[in-house]
Length: 453
Figure: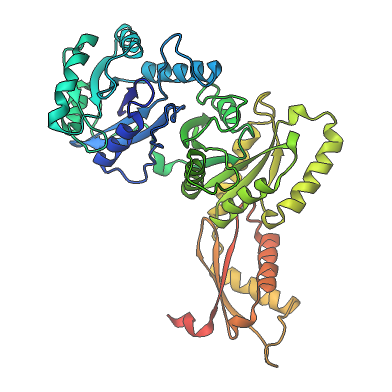
């Protein structure tokens, strides 16, 4: 197993910038980075990523800013949970980087956190950030008052001192940290993006699936800003859940929220399946429809979760109304199954896993070419295409070019004559014959001359 290195510190010391720098130095593929911005308190949840140094893999954990006791914050509830998440990271880490701010100097929050870290018994490295030139490194001297034997002056932005810090991390790692090992085999796990409007209950749902408080939960919309990866094991099978920032309407100007939307979209892009969480207590909105459209556009598997079902007064009547509305609003995703759940009450949430497994299987389904050609011949016999300039339009050959999502290529004597409505009819016929539950289908019609290429 690879070791875990947690980055902790007060708000706005550059934890996310250091996290991003360590991932970049390691050169690991397919790693998402956190939002880094000058606004204090941007990172609230823990965020994981792997990096490599001198042949050794280890996992970096970014945490929310640590607020000292008595320091006011945007809300007392969120401040407490941010602190709790940072302490969770300390408990699970093998090595801790206490990041300090070389510009603002030592303050009570630094001293309080240093005391907590000493009591933890973990290996701690003290690093002073924002020292972006050798001339500024004397500023690190005052931080020896924290009681550290060694201080590492660094600049997460320029990379100054990062190599020395990485060497110190390797030296502090436990001896059983195997080179090339990995706690999380990201590439081979089913990746599930959890998407939806702010405050739809995404984080509550994931926490219920995990069986522990992994993500910050608050009634305040927009609590999750970064995508956050969580490993969930159900009957021995592992799943990677990606909690994303709630997707609001497009912002006219740059803002933290609009950047979070980009991150949510990138999470959808790297996922296999999206769980589209709908707050049924508020109905199904146009924005829910747009979120679903993004999932469909990227060709991802989909499952609608009709969440907060515990708030529904008349479930039997509401079920019919809600499913009718879902059918109308999400007509373009008629293939996606749905389930009524309550993340808070943990109602029917275990059914999600079997549905995920089913959709993954459907996305990977491959139909033999011979069978597809018999299918297309049968289709042409029962529903011939309209004539084109007085001539018969034929679908002469069909093959499946790819999976996830299933992609079919049809060769025709007049491909331009095969319009969108005909392609939709072929899509419908394919589903009636082979299901493809929960996954979009892509169909391309090409001229028969390309059959030999």
